[in-house]
Length: 370
Ligand SMILES: *Cc1c(COP(=O)(O)O)cnc(C)c1O
Image (cartoon, rainbow, N blue to C red):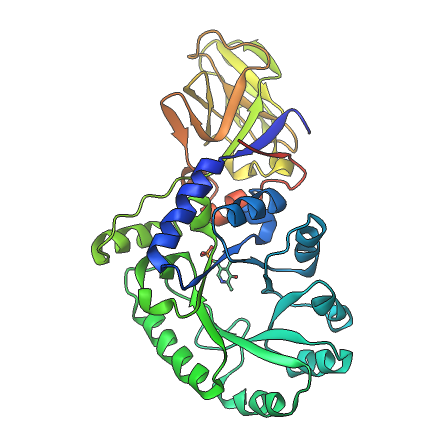
């Protein structure tokens, strides 16, 4: 896999996006960049280094192994763990100097037992109904913090349920009001709730820190967010996508009229065709939904996928593209010449969203910063 398909990350694009968010939030609000899910597929260590170089104050990960990878790479920035850490692994929070989101009393009790100073952030339930502590359960946690010797309530956090899927932000605003009220009751050192969409739309969600994911990588959270920004904000926002996914041509073959291509014989040539074989498939994250639907770029032109995407191989039609040669560069996501294929276009083909598309590019594919 090493040399036949790879991902390039543009350091200029990351720099552009981070500069934009810094200008939105100002100097005093912490910029915390999400590098979970292998940095939305961009490569966790590579991306973390780029984020920090371009002004990120904190990094957010989902799991302990991600935080470990960052520390092993020598990254010393504050790391906030947003996912669940099993009770038996909680000793690593202080050992790796991490901050942890907490929404179970059991977690706090175990951390107290371990007896090392740690900073935690309480996740408050404001309407998403995934992680989070409900208002009526808050008093138990409050009581815990009165008596703890080792645990500092560094922050409160919440997460918006319906900010990117709609042009109507009333639900997000109701969550924000709940968050303020519950946070006031706890009086933490810091508060945070903004994701990319909130950071681009609502300064009143900034508090002490914003947690930026998708848009740090130059992608819009959704078409609705893009429209909302155009309608509601005073600022122009241009994002630069950082990721290009490439592969190469591994065979070019003539396929006469009337022959089938690929598993299931789902595609039959209607003319004498020239087919290029690509060494990527659904194992790599080239979704099987793209079968007979997607395009790739070769020599700056679009080549349609023919037949079903296989586990490691995909076939594309290059009949109309002159001079295709063995090992020519192929772009699966990104630009080539005047053409480009966005993660959003890819997501439409795959019945998915840009978040899932880039996050699913197989972790084993190398990431190069360019
Ligand atoms: C992933 C995540 C974010 C970032 O969301 P984007 O929409 O990618 O900006 C923020 N907060 C939490 C808790 C997350 O899990």
